[in-house]
Image (cartoon, rainbow, N blue to C red; front, side, top):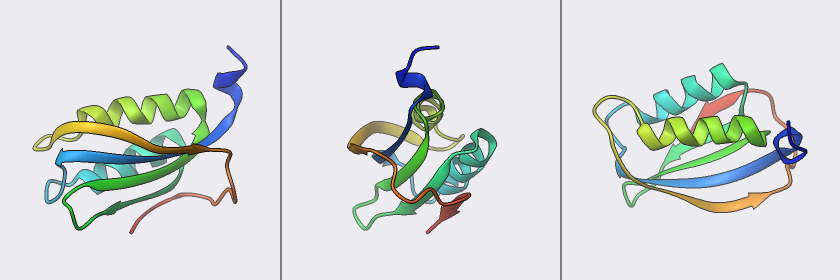
Length: 97
């Protein structure tokens, strides 16, 4: 395992496409809970979904892969990394905002 895959990081993602009204936030929260990722997911007024996630880099990569596919009924057109930063306060759990 490389050093970077053992580093805890925080990323903020913007997911665009048909990602509202299709259970996308619930899908992200369930996936994050399964992977033990901390953070949150929320709908934005422009129709996109924003995610902030904190975990080991290798786990974040798994989350990003899942988000790129999305749940049945969604259509992910773009997953953009808005920010990548050192983790701040490591809250427990993952919430839907």
